[in-house]
Image (cartoon, rainbow, N blue to C red; front, side, top):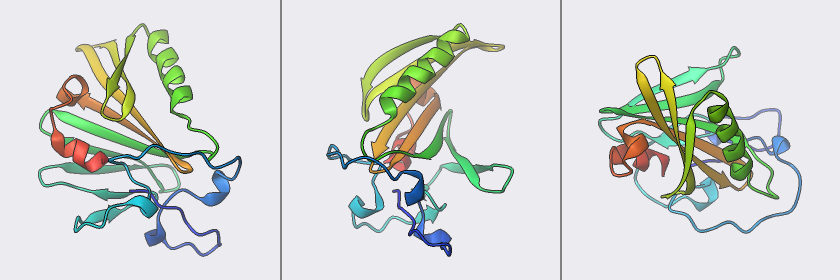
Length: 179
């Protein structure tokens, strides 16, 4: 679930999400009804406990490991969840409310992967168009699945690794956390 912070100098971490000032521009766009990820305003009323990371309020299902990576200033830059032989990396960015950025991000990711000699396949997945990328590494071919979700003034990029990258039914706990 994602939330917008109030635009004042005193921002409380518990108010979570993408700063309004980073995404101020354009007109509102109708968004598809989704089963998640949710904007804070659209989140279901449920009893799930969520870890408040500022921009993300993230449920951590049982059996899922959690790791947050920070930037030089100590701000959380990405979150990695693991279970069994699968992992999910989450990145959150501000986005304009006038249009989504996933189409542009897919093009950039495709160019980056193919520029490194990899192959990219576009597939229809749970969250719309997804990319399955295969890149040769030192220990063989690595496969990842890129998922992008455009929200109202936010964008989340989910990168599935391990078994979940090739099997949508593997690691349902990671899908639950993304939802």
